[in-house]
Image (cartoon, rainbow, N blue to C red):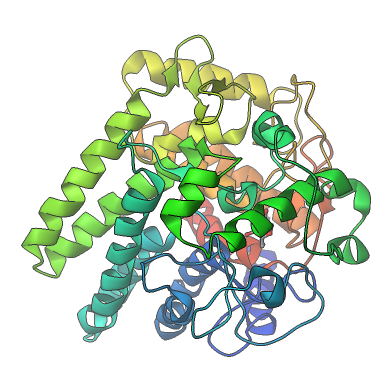
Length: 431
Ligand code: GLC
């Protein structure tokens, strides 16, 4: 690939971020997702940090305008109205000063903050500490919320109460737990997603009814975390979420030290210990990966999804585990044009084009590569990074990719795919 072509793609990536900018925050893509999404914005902020530090900070600052009193950072902040998305602000019925959804998403925020802070320092920015400090305070409040609201029984694992919280909304990992959720709703369902993209790539109607049943249930709890915990018909201690939270906690420990916040270093270190120990108990030798725990049935969730490898961002594997993970990933990638599939191709649940049931996501590969590098598995990390960059260069900045063909699918001109390109292509170029 010549440098010229690479340069063009960088411009394209920046142009997508500019086009999806709605005034200091970025929508994931026009129409299909017309508001600010939590973890999308965290990834996008890191993308911005590669060329515009101010704008990177701004993305996070705008996200926490939606942060609740209790510390939760919602999964969607409805800064401005749009009628191209369901369920909108009226369905959530939350009471924050800005309309938001009532559930959350993976806390990549802390990881992004450290990334931006480091980029600001490297760029010689005198205001780095000043800019980072309030965002650090917001992140800390959100981590406290996670521990209190989503691990009240102190397992060292945080739970999701809705599949949409996982970020892997339609993953087969949730099939059994979701099947127990009633399909009755008090809200009238008016899907908009299938008007933007092919219905065959989206969740089924019956699953949508269950998704909305959960929203109805939690809204009826007045969005009170204790009440929701007690009445949740869907409750999964998720290893992907916990892995990301633990990694973000490690990043906050580093920032707390830089900010001279000693008490917070101690508090976060205790959190980190709990979470990494919790994750350690979720490793399964026979499956060569980590497994989530269904807190309603008490059973392991064995569906083979990418979530099983995400804890690598936070935990240090021993030699045997590393070899096992490498062998398992090789098995998942065997015969694929682009890796890593979000569901193992040998699983009956594998659907290469349907949302979270097989397709490749650039940001998941970004997390995977970080986890593999943290565990000194650099070669595998490099190959995922190169594969992601290649997929984007040949198919465009799509929402996700068919692993069996490399075809780009879902929404196009996707912000986090552009951000992933900006960050990962640098690594590929730098070797
Ligand atoms: C879908 C994805 C979720 C993402 C959102 C916006 O709902 O499953 O992870 O945050 O789209 O891109």
